Image 1 (spheres, rainbow, N blue to C red):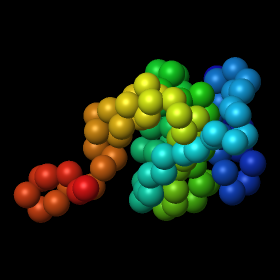
Image 2: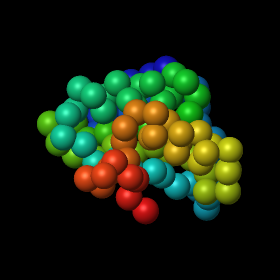
Image 3: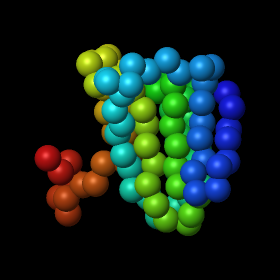
Length: 98
């Protein structure tokens, strides 16, 4: 895996991603802990959840997990990864937001 810091963004890339430019999309996660999100981006690529992830290089910001929009298996993997890592906000009663 390559980790590339380009100033405002830090990229985590496995191999050479071959996304169809007409199908590529992303899941986003807004964070307040850069160290935690760096580990999450790295883990998502290492575990082959996605081929590429990035996060803003600031203490607070956004991270992006890239996949093709019609790859349903990858969407399921990303959703499970988000659930497993507490990346989806919950209500006061611990239910997931819709």
